[in-house]
Image 1 (cartoon, helix red, strand yellow):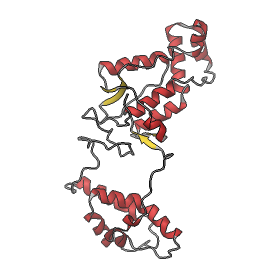
Image 2: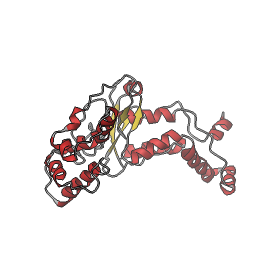
Image 3: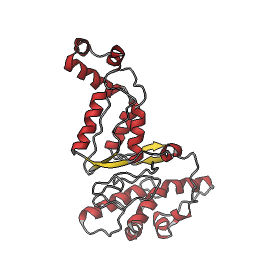
Image 4: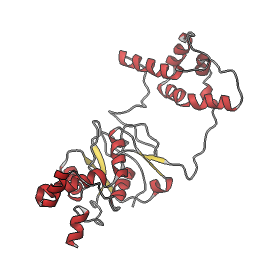
Length: 274
């Protein structure tokens, strides 16, 4: 049994999913999706991205409405990618700390950047109860998804009349309609996870959940036979299926296959067979 929460990247089997997320262990630098690789802007798109980031930094800066920001932009462009990210990320906490400490004067953006004032922010030590983010389609993420799906589903709301007749008539079409409604309504937290993952966002887990022992896992290539075998299992059980966004080439799954604690089929069908 292993206990790690690493995610999946597009070009390798043991990296992260290419999104900027808090993880438990250091990630291997992604290749095609790397956002943290240090390099200076060398084309128009980079220059535009830097300008947009600078505007986010100075937007609403106290006391600077209508004043020139040329020197501040010059200082911002001198920074490395990592430093620009840190300056942006720490801007609001730094301004809040000034107000908390009773400071009436806010240093100019150029001063904030030139003197690297964001580095004066006290470093917060993570507490035992602090949540961590499981990268989408990674080991801890998939295991948490399967744990949620192993719980009893919520009863779907009453369907429209024609869907109700279709389900009552039985057969392949009726069973498919029942399973689709189960996937839509049965596990709201799972659907939330899948929606966030489609947007490149991970799932907040408690530190205990993230550190729970994980089964042996392997990375399954998207659109591979093994991936579609998992999709068949999800469909048969009425589980909502994942839709990895472009750039995600692998999803981590347990080597031993899906859990067997829940039988396949809609709840009413299971009750009748029991």
